[in-house]
Length: 130
Image (cartoon, rainbow, N blue to C red; front, top):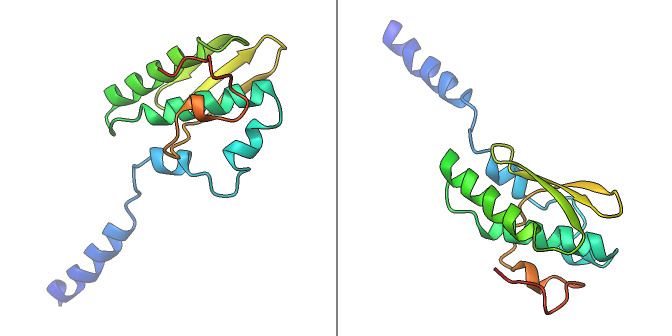
């Protein structure tokens, strides 16, 4: 009887274990305005989308060291944008907080759509593509 009960209990325990993948839900664009459409709202919005794309492009893996490298790459690209005053990286939360010259502050999540930051509408062709 105990053996018969052990298998369903094991199955219930395994289905109750959460997924520790914190990256996939963050980069999902489901339910959001498409990045190219949001970039057309203004110059700062275009810069935020470009930074998000470079941030997503830098994704290398699922270890905390990789998260830190991704955040550093996204922050380095953000510092090349003309209107960004301050960048704060939250490497474990997969987010950059940007402050623009106008005073607008926004959080940028990685955008993993396969495009680079310089491909974003509204970003001048002279913008760095690193």
